[in-house]
Length: 331
Image 1 (cartoon, rainbow, N blue to C red):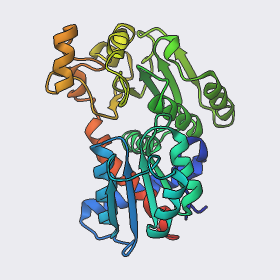
Image 2 (cartoon, rainbow, N blue to C red):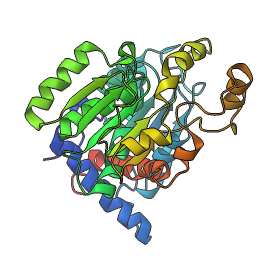
Image 3 (cartoon, helix red, strand yellow):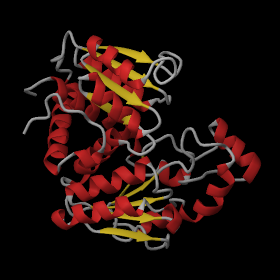
Image 4 (cartoon, rainbow, N blue to C red):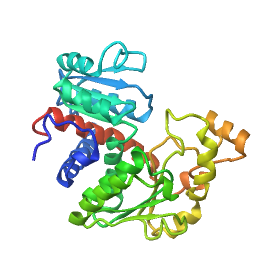
């Protein structure tokens, strides 16, 4: 199996063996990092980092990963390129492909990162789109594997809006590796019927069980990991907060939700999280709606079962594995 020169665009593109290889190399590179052992195996390589949506973890993970691997990274913020404005995506991709060894894209439609991959001629990586967030899923799976030793047969319960990149990618990833997946939210917030059908087909081969429930008291029963995300995604209008708060407040992850999971269950969140009033948006929501937290309580977020900061660190190691495997034929 080789992932050399391969794109990394969405979980549906990957096999269980691909995911296993990414996690194997991520664990290896994490050990090297923690031991202070150099692993600059990509000296002389260059990567373009296109960010149409800003980020803390994704940007830092790609930049540090590139530096650790010996690469040079060029960051292009929303005002730093003419992609899709004065220059077509195809033309931009062809130019960047002649200057860089790889491209990362974080932004809006999945079709944009797919077009970059099609026209650039170099490995292209999805740092997040509206539909998919595959680098986050690798970090999540590495975190679960470090905690429990395996993925197959484990159960992940996702609370909140499961229609977009996180709910979609976690469901697909779980089906691929034989992990059980539960979406706990109003039915109108379930993933699309088409994607659910695809995942059921995958699950027939892997033994994964996919469950969809509107009952917050049942969602976490027997779960090894309880996962949530912000209720309003980047780029959505502020006007949707009232609707999301009304619809999703019953699905806040609380200590009671965690108590219904397994005793050794972990809490996960891709961050940023609204668990207190220490953010501008958090204070605005408090002033408008009187909420001191949203998708998760501070007690759970900072509690003994929380794995959010291990999960955040693992963004670095899994992204490093994605880059290394695409640009080096032996890792």
